[in-house]
Length: 189
Image (cartoon, rainbow, N blue to C red; front, side, top):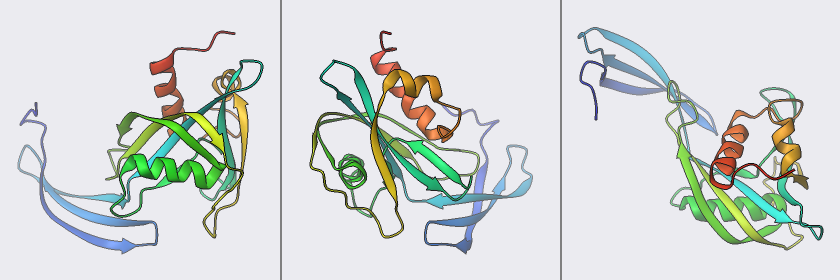
């Protein structure tokens, strides 16, 4: 339920900058006290992140994760596979596609975990999280022209221990890990 004393009324929106990946919009809005102010938002296509889980012959569960360069931080980042949802594509289809493209794994089971706003203060898009189980390795990647990634199985306990440190710095990966723990609990040591 909306509290009218908190709701702003958008009056005008215009695109002021555009890139291949996102647009920046200027928004004129009226405050609950009837003042007008200007805000800026970043419009990007919705994203998917997949948490693929695999069990080795010793019964240890691991996540299939990718390592890639991130231009914003100018460093390597270890992440769950994911990416942009193509126009007209359903989030679950995008999740299966991104998993296959970046890791070579096909999911026998794909479960929607959550959908969140990456940063509702300035971003307009949604990020959809999925769990992938019963994986089959096709040993075939289909990376974008500007995408260079390595994938590897990393024990879940190691990911939990490292999240927020070193190459585990992507905030949305912390969200993905949280949703995994929320649904599955902490792994037994």
